[in-house]
Each structure stands twice: as C-alpha cells, then as structure tokens.
Image (tube, rainbow, N blue to C red; front, top):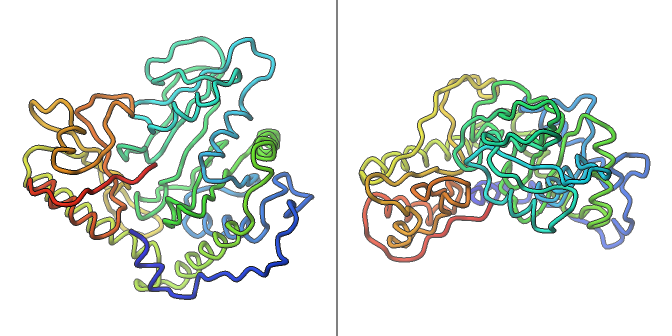
Length: 359
C-alpha cells in the first residue's frame, strides 16, 4: 500500500553504503545494545517524540530482526532459569495468530503457550502479551489477567496515527515496534523494543547476540533514513510530503470502501470503533486498523472456506483462538489487489486470486 508514496519521494530515502563500511559486529561497544546503530537510535527517539506515541526518556532501546525476534528475546528475558516449570505465556482472544507458534516453536523449557488470558487461572508467574491496537480486530487492549506475579509485553506495532488516534504516549515496561507496520518496509526486517528495566534490556540483547550476533547494520541505516524523512515531513506539515497524512487518508478511503462493500453484500459485518481525539492530527476520527476483522452472518460457519469460494484468501478465526465465523483480511495490500478484493466482497464475480499478506 505504501509503495506509491515512497516511489513519489524518489531519491529522498536512498542510502549509499561504501563497501568498507560496517565490517565490524559492533556499533557502540559502550551501549547495552552494542549492535544498535546510534543514527538509528536517534531517529527512533525523534519519531516517537514527534508522533507522541511512546515515552523514550530513561528507557533502553534494543534493535531486532523484526519484532518477531524481539518478542522471542523478551520471552527469554522474562523467563526464570531456576523454575521447575516453564513460565506460562498468555494473550486475550482474539490474539495474534503467530504468538502460539513462535512461543512453542523451539519447545523451550523456559516458557510455554498457555492460551487465552481471560480463562487463565494458574497461580504463579506468567507473561501476558498485550497487542494494542489489537491484531486482528483493531481494538485498544489492556492486560486482563489479575495476578500479582505477571509481567507484560506490549506489542504496539500498530500504534501509529494512520491506524488509530494518538491519545497519549505509551509508557509500559516493555514495548515492541516494527518498521514494517509503521512505514511499510517489511523487507528491511527491523524492529525495536523500548525497555524500562536495564537488566531486561541486557538479557534481550544477550538473546539476540546468541541467535544472530546482532542485527544488520545495512538495514538499520536504511531504516534510519526512512524514519528521518518521515519526521522531517511531520515537522514541515504539507499534505503532499507528510507520510502520516498520506497513509491516514488512504486508510480512511479504504475503510470507507470496505464498509460500503460489506453493506452491499449483506453477508458480512466488521467492527465499529468509537471516534477519539488524536493529539497528533489535532482532530477526531475513528480507528482504521490495518486488518478487517470480518464476520460471516447467518448460517455460514466457516468464513474462510466461504471466501475461498470467492477466490479471496483470508486467515480463519481458529488461528486467532476464536470461532471460524471470523476471518482476518489485510487492508494494506497493493491498490489493484485491494480494489479487486472489495469488488469480490460486494459481488460474487471471481477472477484472479487475492491473497491476505502475512503477519
């Protein structure tokens, strides 16, 4: 979806890296996260300050190969090496479909997926994953387990003004962000964690050191350049040049198309969101999530299979811990694919395959 914007900017985000540069593993040997490029860290802090979506003062930044690696690093950091049983990892349904898979992929003795946070009653330590705005349904989320021994990982990948109003800077103990959801550059494979506790930041850094011996400096420099261009555009407001103005208007247009198509079909429903005041845009608007959480009405029990019959590929509700009457559909696909998808939702004329993008 964002390709047209970056194409329009031409060479503004081009980065030239000489062949001799970045031959060392180290970026800053004096830093806790010693493979974090200082220029990238500077632009992370700057962008959060410009947007007003996260507190960075007196926090540590840990860079990772996407937020997936950072999620694994956070599980490692929060796990005890002395407990007899692995620590339970939970999230309220509908949860991000990759959480159970990532948590249990290595069958670690340190942590284990324990399902829906709303039904979790086990006494003892636990890790709760809080995704806000939530993937897949787009709603603002808070922790739900009422326990005294819990720690929290706040996945804020979609807490950006094109998706939801910026009500206040998030100030949680551990917050995850990713370039792919902020700017659309999924191929960079870059994310970052904002961490309050120094010991947790050191353990996360150690995990990344053990798994990949750091994070690509080339990708960090590309990301730094992109974030700088976005912040520059925000500080010189101009609808043509501002990334968030462009993406916000495009998301609003797409959600209008989506709601109209759903209404015309009579077969589906999507959530309604209360409007809120956005301190970044200084106006009131409804959230417009990166995914549409679609429910099939009536006697359609398997929404994924029903849509497949219309040559629309979506991810079924069972992957998110809920009924198969639900599916998640991406709102971020390329323009032609999205227009084809909207047509097929409102009618039943199939032609080429339209696929939901991963993550």
